[in-house]
Length: 538
DNA sequence: GAGACGATGAATATCACT
DNA sequence: AGTGATATTCATCGTCTC
Image 1 (cartoon, rainbow, N blue to C red):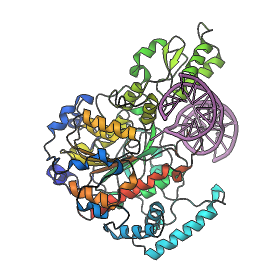
Image 2 (cartoon, rainbow, N blue to C red):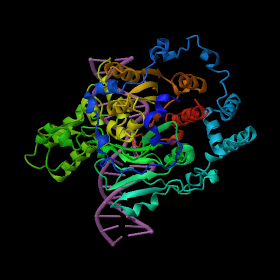
Image 3 (cartoon, chains in turn red, yellow, orange):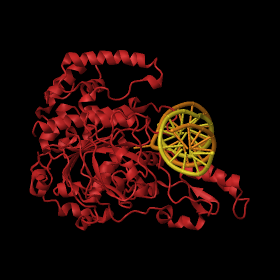
């Protein structure tokens, strides 16, 4: 492991303690709130940059831009076991996985089998499971949804109660006991209010202690994200794969002026979190002061709904203007209802008399916590900007959760960023003043990779960015190579595609097994590989 | 080919009320 | 506890225009 990580004051944080942690709210530890102010903190990275940045060793041949085809043309030995052939056995588990894949099973289903049967399962057991699963799958298609078996009937070994937390707070004690995450419980219920273990603006309900399942404890730390309102069962599955950690559901409306209900599964400490400063505006009026002049009294919205990938047409806003222009004061009930419905559906704001408009990409950037023009330039179209932004993290929210890493890694971190998108996690860490030493990033969209690469250059990052376009390229060999190169990953972060989970999707809301959303299993696969390699003692 | 536009509801949660 | 009304949702696809 990287010497920088285990050094200095890390004795306060024992990797192996399952529970540890008994600290105060971020309040009392005001020393933590020495946050670099917003985007103007480019210097902070350098200030902390005492760690050796071995840029030189890391040959520029490896510098991502050429990774499109992922050229391992360096004459390092990595070449010898790159693709189809022998991956060096990082663990027995991997060997089995490899064998199963060679037998023709998908990596994904093989992973599932190993997860279900346990690491000690023999190859025969695994194969039997896979055969049974295939039969079951065929039967499944004939079964009514209600009779479909769901989740884990296998993990009887984990009968322990693994979610125990102490709650410091005044209200909502009635919810506490329900928080225990029973594996027989089919429903992962969403917290109300949706504040996870706590948000900066509402500390009345704030959990500062939790016990992680043993298998969940790092290294590395990991942070997984997806839409909270996924089809039933999705989060049970996600949680089950991610070492039975209870998801933390948080609505970003507590961090910014727009809603964004998301679930996060992570093994980070949860005490001493602190928010990015300055705090972003929390209401539409604060975010867009100019709209106040035109905002009708009968539009009672103070915040926006979820920022999505599609936006309203100019024609729609014109229809709304026409519908309103005939009325001097307050329009009749029917008209108000129509207009308000459209406004809520499309997140329209008032920009003139009877005139509404969709948010500009710049404004969406701001709401999501990105620097202005983050997605602008480089030949990126307006439509692509909306799409990329709509799929992104809300930076303030993620940064709040990741803020606990700052004290743990004063010299910076090595980051594995899967499904990076426009770099929400990278931006969050940067704004927290956590130096990025080495970042391995996977992102399918070339537009997005370009955005992150551009941001990396603009912010004069001192570390190294390696980007790939396909998670499949990250196999055991490649991971071992990078981990060997810079001493493992400190954080594995990623939000896998939500296409088949999102409520907006009329066409293919197929759940976790959907075409894109099934990439979650690659997140698990890669994370598990990293954990195994780390455990092997790098 | 790129982009603007409109059509395409179901699933799920919340809430007021009995 | 049950019920009906109400609200929200990281989207996809075909067609058209330029």
